[in-house]
Image (cartoon, rainbow, N blue to C red; front, top):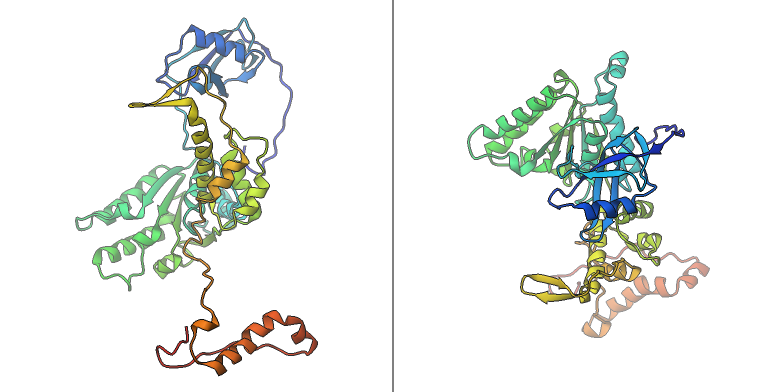
Length: 426
């Protein structure tokens, strides 16, 4: 199911399950009859179908994930106390934790719509562009500060389109031997053309395609020229789309940014308040939250935070909560030993987030700070006439704003301080 899809729901008949086979995600655990009995008690009355994923809290290992492999007698059953429950140590199919969907991307609704229009339509419905008689877009450039979700959005697009995903990290493409870097680029584009539909993701694009007039080495210039040639040949490769990501768009070679190569640039800015609320909801949906948590209030307090900052905030809040529960453990040489028989359920409260906010700062505005000067008029010797003019031109409009309005007097728009070095301008 994708965003904006219409879903039809209907009632299905279900029978009592006679046999259910589950596959654990943690294949290293040894399961015995006691776990099976406990699982059966916890899942009694639970409706399942083949392919479902179930999370159960076991007394020995805590939360464990299982996948439903087999159900008898039908595809939709209800687990009963008489159901035979089997657990296979090796799962039939691997759990892919790297699968990212658009539901995992928050605060980028407009950007997702633009990227889907550019990438998803040509890959899923190339015949539409053939009927229109135009070439589909072949490239999209994602621009935004670090941690804003450029890589995450590219992975989500690849997953939603079921496309082959080839990743090129900028620094990794460089090679010490002559011509080897260009050969790597050609190989990746060739692999993508053989496994259509494909998405080629160029991460840290500014590292492999800088402005050629700004670099001194021949290797960088050859790589840029090779990339331009490969981008021009995309229309002969079929369903292949290139997504580039950079936080320094001004450092890119201008030839890459023309239509026909990267047809559209999508800006991933610092999320607004609603975007931060969505990201907080995504990163806390698997956390045991206390009743006093106010995500809307946290969204108001995290101005300037990008997605990576909010993820770090949630992680730090969870660690704060974990440190409070470490009193149940006894420090030992090889780690921690649980003193009591059971661990008290750990919940993340609002106080943990407030403490985490004191340590986590927004990365997008980390280099921007406001400094309030402690220098007073008494620290400046002489310049009496200039001080009076500055007071009248700068300070009076702030503290006597009503008088300026009554007398219809306009304050000066700017002041230029002139003088030789060392006379006290700063």
